[in-house]
Image 1 (cartoon, rainbow, N blue to C red):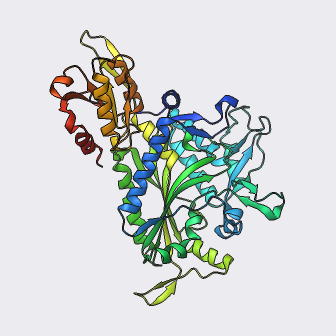
Image 2 (spheres, rainbow, N blue to C red):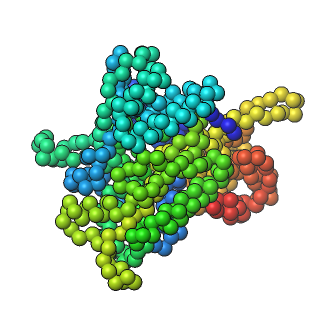
Image 3 (tube, one colour):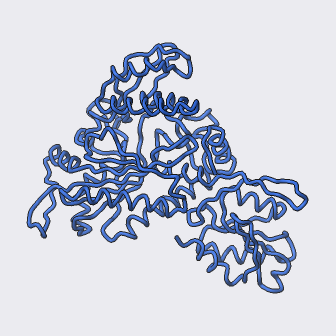
Length: 482
């Protein structure tokens, strides 16, 4: 389905709340901006995506292992990584509304308006000029670009702007009971540094030989000034990152390998290739010699879901310099020590949840036998990551049907996540399961007592067929294989 406007995003947000996927954090206290909680079905979806990524990385590759590093790190870590000096965004304030904006977001929003007005060439030119100025850190030029295009504040409607300046995105806090600068530490803005500082610990304890990778999932924190588009950009979010350590000089080959490998992972979710594209970075991060984003076509346009970066030896070299600890690898094939280069794959777990919700959501028009129409809201979530795999529904609450259904539930729950419900008509129960994305429903009726058969209903096609009770687990498991 095509979802290109804010109306569709608002429908997804409302659906996510109503059906227990995602809630505004601290909602009873009017919420906290850009912070969200995952409900019963959202937490299951998130876990299933995380588990699928983890399996794809660590189980399906014999040279990638995982770790779980702490969120708090020794503050020198962030000096070595360059975050204290470089982890910032150019911001601009409107003097009338007192609102602060990220410069690239402000210009991109104006470009989106040009696109809607069919001024495609003007939008492309504007974005190209912005990227070139960002690449040069030309803040005066960026402000001139904003003024030349008469870009105004969405709140005040004026173009009364302050000069552009940098703003560091890291959250700071104090370690211990004394609040002074000596005890200042930071909430990590990325999970990667926990991998780099543990490079030798992992390499030696897991007996890894280059090339090898270290994978990690976990929370990261960024003080985004303009957090927007639901869970796409949040202040507290979860990353799934893998750092792949290689011989210097082989980075181009491995960079291309991981570009293809990671796109294939996305396509394995059953999403058509036309929904994805690569976007090469114009301005490279201070640590990279090549970088590309995998972008997905969200309701608000193509946006980054995953980044693949060739980080050179920047991280390990700097950590060696700042720690005075040797972080070289001895390569027995080359008979020499060297600091490995790194290819990074970094994907946002929350963005993947939004991707799945966006791609799965459909308001389907159904034509009845009397030519009237009905609407069902269905989430076409890939079965193997669906929050609930199988709903078990006795037709009535009596005549021994619940007992048969409970026996089936107790058997199937050992293999995959199941749901049991007796309340309401079978049609209403089907609709609720469609709305949370349950791919299969089993209905136990009076005939089931006689022939030990049940009705299997498929979410996407709504097709129904009779299958033996003894075959339920095997049939569902066959559909859940990737």
